[in-house]
Amino acid sequence: SQQGEEDPQALSIQEGENATMNCSYKTSINNLQWYRQNSGRGLVHLILIRSNEREKHSGRLRVTLDTSKKSSSLLITASRAADTASYFCATAYILTGGGNKLTFGTGTQLKVEL
Amino acid sequence: DAGVIQSPRHEVTEMGQEVTLRCKPISGHNSLFWYRQTMMRGLELLIYFNNNVPIDDSGMPEDRFSAKMPNASFSTLKIQPSEPRDSAVYFCASTVGGWGYTFGSGTRLTVV
Image (cartoon, rainbow over all chains, first blue to last red; front, side):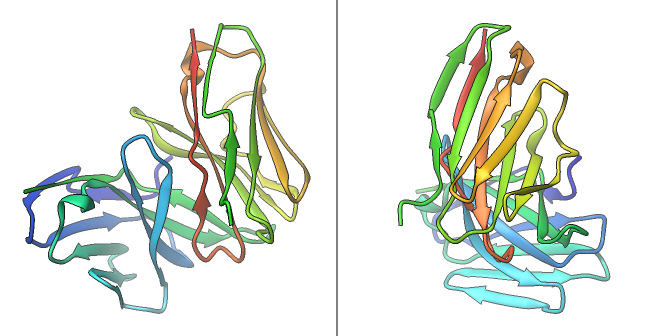
């Protein structure tokens, strides 16, 4: 079953605008990760935020995490047409047998128009 | 680094046939995951290996699905017999320590 639900399901903006995507999850996590998927391609890891962190930046990306609300947001600033893709949040929790189990949300389809 | 390598990229097979998907993880990564992606169900974790040992196979849909990891550099996902509802894109991913997964390009399986 899906651990995360993302909002909105689809987002269309103009180049130069900021894009914000939200993710909610259900269980306690070790970390939360965001991935990007271009049409017909595999997923690419964008950024990871640990459960004891509240905010993280990487280039034009800003991620926040609120463990009390079990939610996260991904902000892409100054969007470009090349940012058009699907964005997924993924929650990781530690398995008894070792390692992390990563469960993906439903994704947000972002379209950046010229 | 060639990344996670999956083969084949595309597979079309007839219902009832055996299908084998292959994955070569990144050298040094000790965890490997098989995911399935469909429009209806999104990304589903099928099975997870840690140090070549299956840790969690609760996502494997039926006994028709099996996965092996005979060594650190190779894994297979087998479907026998295949059914049309198995049609999906199957992804393999690897990681070390769980800090960011690297995905392969996927195998698009079509069962007719």
